[in-house]
Length: 435
Image (cartoon, rainbow, N blue to C red; front, side, top):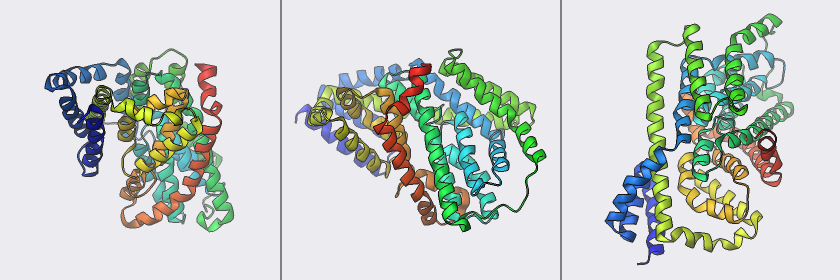
């Protein structure tokens, strides 16, 4: 059996292992190790197992990952995100669908401290959905708006997906963060438009709020939230202004969040310790998956399967539009079964050479890829954001109702994705101006 045949067989075994429920990191490492053994012998396989994990884990860019994860966990534990939704809710009380719009804006603000769509959905869902149900919002609109709002967390910096993409594609993370801002804001605007249009066509989806909001209540919410807003501006102002590296920005943000939490007495020592523990567990899991993806890339290169696949799709490299259509369909399909980071790390060793051969901008492609991956968080049968919301609402809203609520926002997602693909300057404007 040739090296290429072994490589292709290994990919089939990898997909089978994942579908059978094997943990992603061990599946990637195990299949890659056995494949290297079959192609080059056990000495080469053992050598790769010794060198590749160190080279991946020792990359300085990766050190920003636990810092931003800690920032998000601390903000959540200290309750600093609650005020963002309250601020948006009070200022938008008179707008049709104001609570749903507040959920989108609250998720956008939380995304600037978290970088995880699942964390965004879970956190905002616990706060917003009970209030929307109490205000007699239709369950589809209440659950659907929060489920999709969480996906903004992967686009607005600090994005965990963009950090991993920058590491593997060898492009500056700061440039990717800048590119993600416009895509994230465009997505948020699109979701708000869906809410406004649907509530205008069918006012029963979001009845007007009975309570009259006073100016004093709005100002009180602003006073409550200003430390968080200042934290966001300071962290990302320093990052994009060249004062901080990504790692320093995450560390400074985490330290500031802890100080704010302790000063407000909303963060206890026990909660701080739990946030550190959650950060450590999440970081270890993500690094293990990254090591597995690096081993897979080494295996595909040595077996020749990577070159074989690239050559097989060489005709698409001459037609970028056809290539992007194929990539879009691939990630929409994979998104129905796999979570985003795993999907990206498994496929990038194959997809990146095709993108480079087609002459596509790697920063632009990273943002489009992130948008595609997050769309998969909403599609059945394994729409992770939908099931996160289901976990929040319990038996209050059926899963089928949440998927129906997501449908209209999914159409807007496809429209935004089309704009990002057809007009790359939407993504590349900020990196060119500020980079």
